[in-house]
Image (cartoon, rainbow, N blue to C red; front, side, top):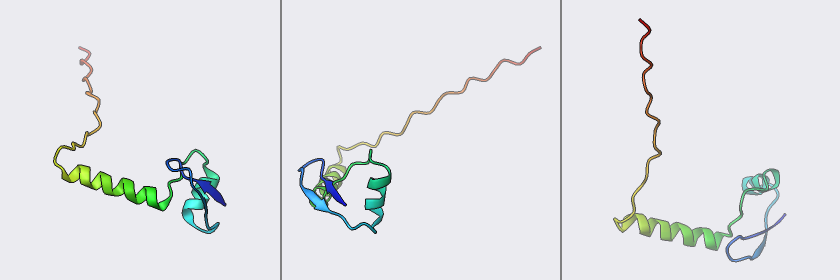
Length: 71
């Protein structure tokens, strides 16, 4: 199967038996990144986290309001 990287637009030939290829074939909405782009993004993400300026945002939880008791 051939897949095109969404960042650098290189076309790679993927092995049909690998899990990533099966994911791309069965769910075409998934995006493919070539190994070079994937490594580059991983390095930059780790560097950004280690800089100390990166902040993880937790998802906001709903505040549940208790229903008043019926008297």
